[in-house]
Length: 302
Image 1 (tube, rainbow, N blue to C red):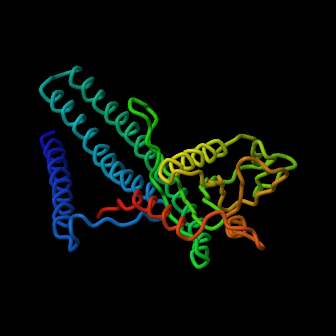
Image 2 (cartoon, rainbow, N blue to C red):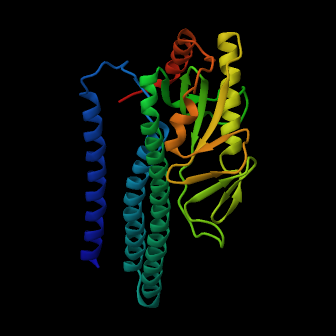
């Protein structure tokens, strides 16, 4: 019994020291950065998701540490109490200690697995936004301004609505395009549906497994917010078009709707003005709008 308690105590001490050293090492690295404290970079594609993944990484580390420390500590305490007793009481307490240890291990493991799954889903969304960003890159050569993960929202005072972000914004001669990216995993297809296709009838989206309006209302709402915001800033109305993009899916459009639903490969053709159409925005207005949005995006710190 003494040997067991010694091992439990040693494990707790070792893990505590390890956690402290990890924290101090990270802090010392931050203190030795070569950049000025006010250095701010523009957001890249999926910046909000990148930050969320960093937070989830910390949660995973904390969850694993707690998952080791708490069950071991609980078991050690109960067994220590049991060692002070005799007879059947000692056996009962020892049994309770083992049961508590197993229950806590299962609970902590489930918590850690849930966080790991959230991290995996977030990484999938981040990868999808990177794919969309690559298909937007050629637009820059044609005079378009492309911004990613634009923080917007500005909810009214007292509102419980959290701030949100626009995954991508393209400002060009044809107008402004607010792009919402949705990266969805494929599932089992119903009879008569293809596993890689999304059907859009102008009102709802039909997936291989069912129908919903996932992303449509959000894309429209965010485009309307951006239109209102820019109207206040510029003193005039500028066209803002909502686009909903599904990386990895083929989009079958059966009718036009308020939101244009696309595969990333279709973005350049949907955004570029065709033929001899009169541009909706001149170069000076494009630069002015881009500067307004860039001011919101320059907040990336080390």
